[in-house]
Amino acid sequence: MQGSAVPLDALRAGDPAAVSALFETYADRIYRLALGVLRDPTAAEDVVQETFLSAITHLDRFEGRSSLGTWLYRVAYNASIDRLRRRTDEPLPPDEPGDDAETGAALPLPKAIIAWAGTPERWQADREVSAEIERAIAALPRSLRVVFLLRDVEGLSTEETAEALGLSEGATKVRLHRARLVMRERLSVYFRERLPQEGGTP
Image (cartoon, rainbow, N blue to C red; front, side, top):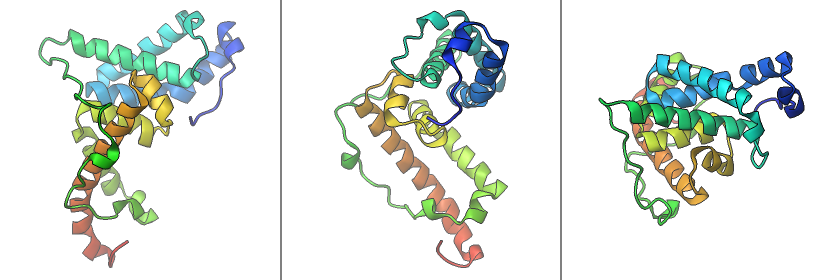
């Protein structure tokens, strides 16, 4: 997982510098995950505060079987899902059935795929392109969106992503594959429209 290691002993001792370092390292990442689940900036900010308060208060529950960052993602994801469950106007969407029974190879490829992954660096820095990618991520179903955010945006491994979301690695791989296909399907249309203006295929 990306990110600087924060000394666990210092955290358990209540070292303010260690607590601050933990917040600086993971606050933005946890916010993105919570926002991906809740689609509510204010609620996502509340989840960030709740996650760190819970982590510092219950640090004795961290057994070290996963990384501290993965544990924080797990706390944040659970807090986000709890908030969804409490919403009376937006019932919690069910997880997709059959994740563990499928493989990525069995999923059909969309018809409108182009190699947008090879986008030139100048496109990657383009605000319009970044905004389009963010819109594509936001349009993913929640169960796919959170896997895509952790695995491809935050850079967690498949094992870490599965641990953070309480999924099997098989289910995580399938959901990630589905998310990537949906992203490529949507972005292929966008990049196809831009290609003539950029002077050819990237």
